[in-house]
Amino acid sequence: MRVVSLLPAATEIVAALGALGRLVGVSHECDFPPEVRSLPRVTRTRVDPAMPSAAIDRAMAEARRTGISPVEVDVDLMAHLRPDVLIGQSVCDVCAVGEGELARVVATLMPTPWVVTLHAHTLDQVLLDIGKVGEALELRDEAEELDAGLRYRLRRVQAGATRQKPRVLVLEWLDPPYVAGHWVPELVELAGGQDVAGTAGEPSRPRPWEELVALAPDVVVVALCGFDVPRAQTERAAVTDPQARALLGRRVEFLDGNAYTSRPGPRLVDAAETLARLIRD
Image (tube, rainbow, N blue to C red; front, side, top):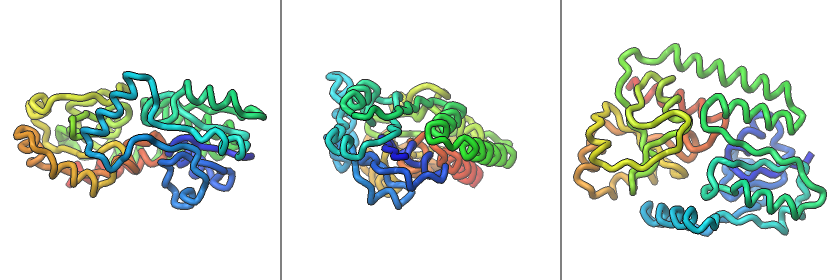
């Protein structure tokens, strides 16, 4: 079975199911586990990740306005790879290959691959998506075992969480500020915190700095979408807004958003475990 993954979370799910050897192509963002970095890249982006955060945000907003995705698919390479299973998503049309573009690509492929579309906004939905991938790869038992193991670890996080329920603000972007949504508020709650701004199952949303300051969080967690901790620290240092600097001058913790909170896959459990340590410490 030949599998092409169009997003990092799907790649990590395939690997966690023990099917890494079936992957023949991945997206330009797939970097975990390290073995996938040598696989053919079937996508590319028009947005330079080295640009300042504000410029990236403007480019993404323009993509939403025009309906032109910044992510392109190498259709010729995809056809050459001849996937039996193609894993995509329908959560965000600008951060990865969207549902419409995926359908267009599939229509060009012969034979037509089995398409698995991931659409998780909550932790339970992430686990359901793992089951969908397991079904497509004929690894139902492995998917059930993985699901059980991840749920066990989440219960362990919840059982060991602090009882103080500190007020936690998780920022997914700093310029402009975005509050993390989707599964992140659930992770905060499992870790023993009270998410003061995000709503479970809802998209990440921009909020002005004055509103965020008024929330009076005990802990601010900076977990930037698509960025690691060093980049997040650089972004924090570049913030000039006085209210933002006051807020980010309080107790601030950093979490690798690219690896842990931005990808709806198995490492969300690692994120819960890390958040529990950050909140407790």
